[in-house]
Every structure is written in C-alpha cells, then in structure tokens.
Length: 399
Ligand code: ARG
Image (cartoon, rainbow, N blue to C red; front, side, top):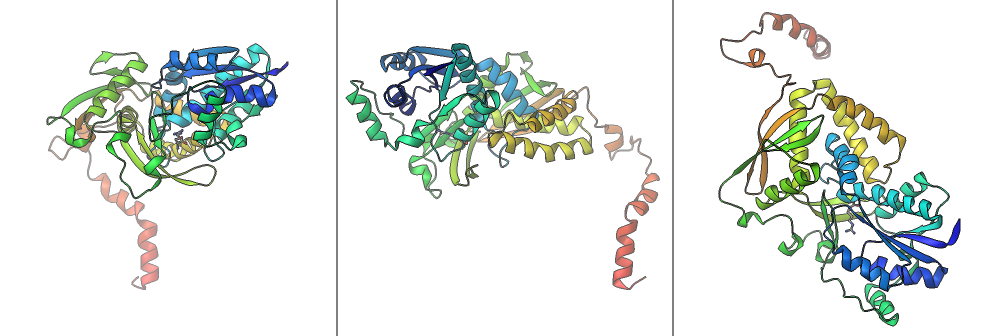
C-alpha cells in the first residue's frame, strides 16, 4: 500500500482546490483528484485543468450519471424518498456513489488514504465517511476542512501564495446540484424569516412568469420507475432532464423548509427539484391505484425509515437493502400512466390508469349499474363496530 498517496473527492470548488497543495504540504502525500459527474452544472474541463495546475499527480473524471439514476434515483422513486416529507435528497443520494468511486480509485491505485471537503457541521461528512468505511475499513480518511480553520478569504490567499489565482465563487449561496435536486444554502437564507430571493433559483421560473395556459404531461411507469414521457420512451437521464425543464418552466419544484441535520443542528434549507417532486407525486398516485390498502400502509411506514437511513448517511446499512427488497416486490405491480397538469406553480395529478389497476368501477359507482351487493353492508357494520358500541354502552351506563 502506498502511504504517500491520497485520493481526493474533488468537486472543482474552492475547498477541494485548496486541499490539493495543502495535503501535499501538510501530509507529504501526492494527490489524485477524482471528480464524479452526477449531473451537476460544472465546467469539468476547467476544474480538471485547475487540479492539475495545483499539483494533482492525476486527475480522473468519472461519468456516473447512469449509475446515479439506475442505482440511486430509481430506488428513491420507488421509495417515494422525501426526507421530512419534502426533500427528495439529491445531495444525500449522491454521496455514497461519489464515495464508492473514490474508494474504487484508491483500491486500484493502492492508495492508503482518501480525502473529502466537507465541514464538521453538515451531513455530508457523515455520508462520506460511513460509506468509505463500509466499503473499505482500512482506508485512512482526511477531512482537511475540519482541521484547517481557514476562512474563504484565507483560502483564496493561500492559493495566491502558491502562485495560483482562483476566482472567488460568484454565487452568494452554497450550491450542491445534480440530476435529482439543487440544494441552496447560506448567505441571506440563513435567516429563516427572509424569503429566498429570486436569484437563488435556476431550475424553476417564478410563478409570475409561468405560462398563462396549463400544460398536460403523461409519465409512464414500469416496475415503479418512469420509462415514458408523453408516450415516448426515453432513457432515464433524459426523462428526468425533460420533466425538470417542463415542470420548472411552470414554476413548480421549489422547497423552503427547516431541516434537522444528523449532527443535531437545525438549518434552513432551500431546494429546487421540479422533476423529483413531479415524478414522486405521480408515482405515489399510481401506487394508490395498484397496491392494496395494507401494502400501502406498510409501505408508507417503511418509506420514512428508508428516507432517514439515506439522509443520515447509512446508505450501506443492511436494513436499507432489506427495505429495498420489500419495496421492489411491491413495485412489480406499479405499472401504468399518470397524467399531470402543470400550471402556475403546481403539478397536479389529474388522471391515472393501469393494466394492474385494483379500482373496480362497477363496485364503486353510485349509478344503477353497480354490482355491489348492498345487503352485505348491514352485517359488516354490526361486526365492525361491535367493540366500540359495546364500550360506549358500558361507559355511558345506557345499556
Ligand atoms: N441539507 C442537504 C443535505 O444534507 C443539502 C446539503 C447541501 N450541501 C451544500 N454544500 N450546499 O442533503
């Protein structure tokens, strides 16, 4: 094992850029920078060039978009994955995947050490480190941001001293984006009373600029995952991008909530996720058509556990896989189409159909065509309410 080699989860941002010369200086290690494409808006070429200039011995870009969709986002759709009921967990889902890529490179290059750029206050450090240790417990993990105590200005100066000019990030916010969601934190958003300014949003239009007419879209599902948009079969990456654009253009997909981090801090979090919210909403609706009441009840309970495991960094917890096995079994029936009306900041489900539908119009109808034998109801009601009626009888003394 090479004790002088460190594989860095490099994002192209300021922190992980500083880390390249810093690890060399402080730990005497060569750095391999690994940048993983999970669909974030990033100038990968510029980022890679910068890593080289900063002294990385090798810079590796890994396109993990397909894997992100097939092995992470699809599981999240099937699990209706929403942390605290609102956040589709784009950031949370990407961390175990990035960690696994970094571990893969470390193993291939025989490196003793890996490094990440997370602070000591957030969830991401937990996600990276639990994932890395689960995959390879012998790797040493460096988290320089937790050690160095540098402000952003000091980081810029540090690089300047090294003869490298790096443009300070123009954004007022701390952004993490990928195919599934865009997380916006920091700056004035840290005051939970202040409305997020329009400039915080990129994927969604303000409702005031949304089209005057509604737009209807149809999403087709097979085995619980989206496969068609408006009758056209699309590869999953394109399907997500397309739904994101359509729903976002109608002003749908913004989230503003108070979030509980794993480390015990409450934080104000703002997200944009037009596709994620539309697809999960459609999926939840279709499930109600094709799953039994008891399947749905149990699934809703277990979904909350699933979201908590993923949010809190326990992607590699065996329970998560066991829950996925249960969910996959239910999803064999989740096939059909959902019709959604996009209009003025909303994405409303207005229709659903499925060859596996459990809805029986002949039973449900109030018209004379009903095939439901109403005489069965009387006995049912007497048995159903028996213990409730008895308890009231006894306790009211009216028996
Ligand atoms: N609170 C979210 C999460 O823990 C988003 C974190 C976003 N990170 C960032 N650098 N802005 O998943």
